[in-house]
Image 1: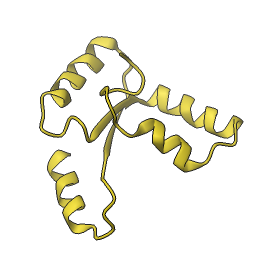
Image 2: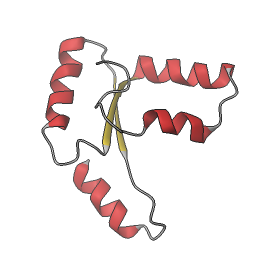
Image 3: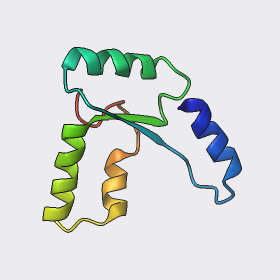
Image 4: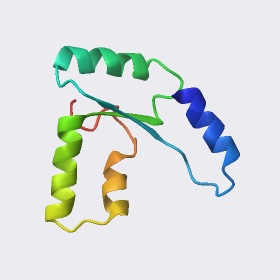
Length: 88
């Protein structure tokens, strides 16, 4: 995904940053930890987010119940420090 993000960023002409997200089916902590360590060790760790589908659905529910705008939700998902949006 990292190479894809780099290619998309270079093709875009709007100057906005490009981010990627892996949505994983499992919620097993060991599986998520292993996947996050692989991402963290890559050159693209600050551009890729990892979230379980369960947590993504929770976020959608929060968005709908609180009438949040898409830009408000996307700010939560954009990587800024930690790798995952659902697990430490």
